[in-house]
Length: 179
Image (cartoon, rainbow, N blue to C red; front, top):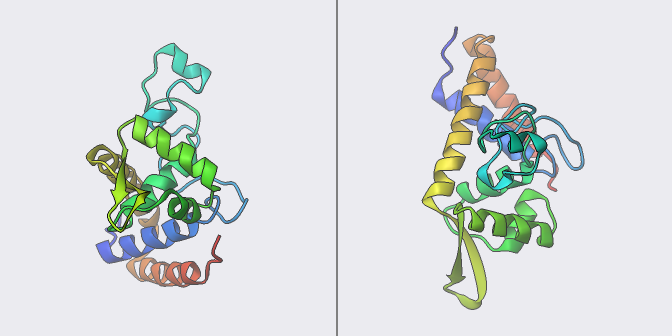
């Protein structure tokens, strides 16, 4: 198994994440498996508990055969990728959902302790959304899982092929249409 250099792994992970931020992991309106643990058979985030019949069988919030909503993951990922809190409208734009859907996602995140609301210091009428420590821990866990999966897949390539893939995916992500 080939070790993947950190800079190559980070470039590929970042490029895939940038492309995923368009409404759906493969572009606007195109469904597909996510690049992370929210795939068929993947875990549910805690706020998704009780949505499916299998969860009535006593399975924990991170187990189960059904996929959780990508919008929830994208919301946490978008907040983790910024240095400052964002408004609900800014989050909606970044994750490719409408403002009412973003508001519902934010409320679910707040209810489960992954997000918090803050007053905007520049405009007291505006509310900003930030990750809590629990939200940061969750998204770091998912990002680590995604990096592990990508690293395993890249092990089939030579170091030169890994570097070339990173270069090409970065170019594709740069050219990826905005949502």
